[in-house]
Image 1 (cartoon, rainbow, N blue to C red):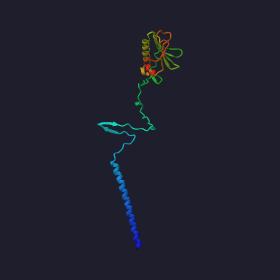
Image 2: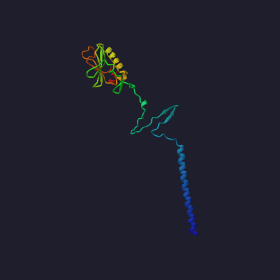
Image 3: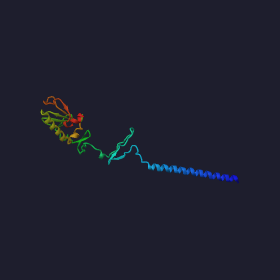
Image 4: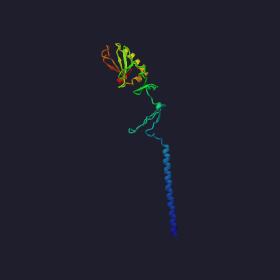
Length: 200
């Protein structure tokens, strides 16, 4: 009988100790949660923070690790900027170096036996498209270089139906023969409006 009472007493003691431990754990966890709520939250590294000082909002830059690789955001084709835009090909156009130009062969001054096309010619210039190399040569033959160059370049743009920026994307050389009596005699030059692009 005594042994039974001792066993009962031991069971109650174990239950009381276990209950006390569980209650203590609950109190500790609750205390930690309350303490965390009182602490101001620190900004997570790598995210922008806003600091207000003298009524001016300053945003600190995002910290990006050195080994972090940023993938470019793909844009739809219609939103990809082109500066300046290339001409939209029309029916009958010729595509040279990715640029749509008028079919200058239809209105050419003449086509040589080698298949080269003389787009335009006058006493001060001649514009030729060489079929094999797919490039243009503008020969400046006038003694007044600037006036002859301006006339030749305008004729070139009109023949091709393009603007200056797109003309600079084509293979074009200006040549002044040695026999011409002007300050650029014997020189090969780019188009005058492309000169700065070639310099850079």
